[in-house]
Image (cartoon, rainbow, N blue to C red):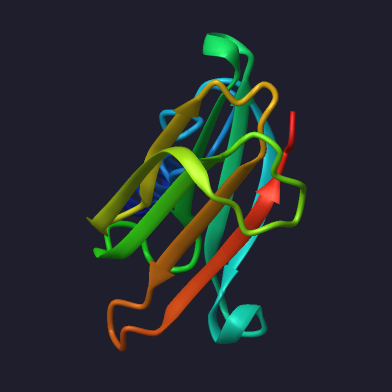
Length: 156
């Protein structure tokens, strides 16, 4: 009986340990970005109407004349599954209006095969500028794409 109880207790600890070790975003874990979360956008297949594979997170900090930072995070596939992911971030030229596809004068990106997220992508000098951001997570088994583009937004 004691042996069965020990085995059940050990199994419970393993289960609890697995739950607590699952990757989660928190105040201290912002995917390499500083500042505050200012936008969260679903990454879905079929032009935004299909399956959700992840989230595109946009952060803002007042450092360096305003700094925006972005990450594309897999929320769908099992931990450790490698798949193509991408995040692109652009600082729009002065005079861009919210909702526009913008010309840009600064950009950053991160893309490749990752197990959890692409990023960070950072641009500075955004205190009085709009930014445009793109995120993507691909299905590793069939190449189906979940993505979104956020046109000029978060304009100083």
